[in-house]
Each structure stands twice: as C-alpha cells, then as structure tokens.
Length: 321
Image 1 (cartoon, rainbow, N blue to C red):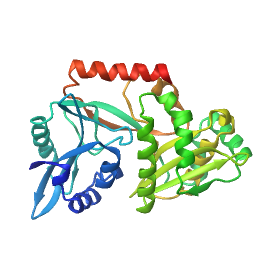
Image 2 (image 1 turned 135 degrees about the vertical axis):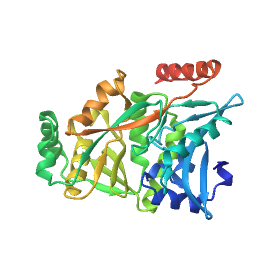
Image 3 (image 1 turned 120 degrees about the vertical axis):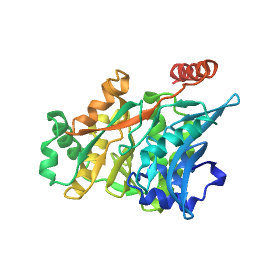
Image 4 (image 1 turned 180 degrees about the horizontal axis):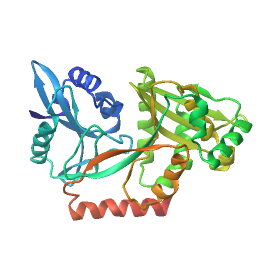
C-alpha cells in the first residue's frame, strides 16, 4: 500500500480499477478529478502490476498546510476495490494519508463503503425500472401541477454540447443562491466537464427555450446503472414555466422501464437545518424518492487561523452577491 501524488499515478491502471470496482462512480475517474480538483493524491494497493484498491484524496494547500476538501463539482468519492476484505485496507489507508495530511473537511464516500466514526449524508434517488405511470403516480400533488404547467409552456427540449447558456444561467441565477462558489471556476470547470464527459459518452446536456431564449438547462451523467442529475439552472423570471421540471420529467419518462437508478445529488447531513435542506431538498423529495446514505469522514478540521479566512471569504461573498 502506497501513498502517491498525482504525477506518480498510472492513469490507465487507475481508470481500469475505477471501472471494474463495485463502487464505481464517474466522480473518481482520473480525467474527472483532474478537471474538478486543484490537486489529488491517492492511496493505492497493487497486485501483479495492477491497481486493485484505490482511494483518491482531493488536496488543497493554504499557508503551507495541506488539507482534504471535497470540490464543489465532486460530490462523492470513497475507496474503489476489485478485491475482498476492503475494510481493513481502508483503515490502513487513513493512517497512511494522515501521516502527510492532518486536516480533512467532509470527505464524502460512496454508499458501498462503511466509514468508521463517520457522520452521514443523504442523497435522494428514484428507481426508473418501472413504467412511466408508476413513476408519475409517486409525484406529489404540487409536482403533478407543475408538470402539467411545464408541458403547457415547453413542448420539447433539445440536447446540446454547448455549455455557454448553462454557464450563464448558473452564474446569474444559481450561484447567488448557493454562495461561496467561485465564478471563474464555474466558467472553466463546467465547460471542461461537459465537453469531456460528452466526448466519453458519459454526459448529456439539455435545454428548454421560451421566446427564442434558453430559460432552463440541466446536465446529467450516465455511468453503468446510475443516472446522475448533476447541474441545473433556470432563469428566475421564467421559473413559473417550470423548464427544469419539464427536463427532469422528460428524462424520467424517456428512461422508464430501464434498470437505472436516478440520483438527484441532494447531499445533506442528517438532521441538517440549513437553507439547502429546508428549501432545495423538498423540491426533489416531491418526486417520490427514497433516501440513500453516504458516510463522510471528518477528522481534524482546518487550523483556526485558516478557517477564519475561509469563513471571512464566505461572509464577503454573501455581501457582494
């Protein structure tokens, strides 16, 4: 078992291990991490010249301190294994990384992993392996009303490989509501993610239009039996037209009766009382979803002087936007 930095990692072996692991997720492929992270290291186990167990760690550095933090566009990682007895390897991997990196902020794992002494996050999902009538029947009353309204205004949606309108909508209408998201990062990372994932057959971008202008957009990842609702935005002045609702419902309908699980990407802590869980989360739960638990590591937080800078940055951002 070795701790390796990015330039020491064999990306072909890495991606093969991610693809073949039972925990496989698009967020762990080398090309995805290269786009979304400033830097990443990994603990790797090799057998007969092949990577059989890997765990990536997104690395940041402030004031000479290294720390681990999940990137905005990388919601879950964890370990990825093609061998049995992975839990013991996990414990050893944590000991190894902590020798070099003492600080960690909410490292979220995938649902196949069992992290000891963890807090837990939740995603919400819906099973698409049923007919559309059954899926639609799970919608809340409000969702059904919004779906009918969406069909009235949007008779079609279209796919595209051009992220410009999505990025513009995201920066103007979504980032101010999220806060603490770097606009320059959005302008560079989102187009790279979309272009690369579409090129690899892993991503789909959809728009709806109203009066010759894109009023809503949503981007999805498709990997193995998982359909991930990843990034979306809409013109706030056109929200009553429910463009995102139309895209979501159309995707569910088009993929009904397929062995797929639709993940909404609604990662929050259990019993969270923040704005996200109180306002955004109910939007997804209205589709008739079930919850999936994801463990998260939270060993030492940032040193107090670094955390103070981090909190000041968030406060300034909210004032400015």
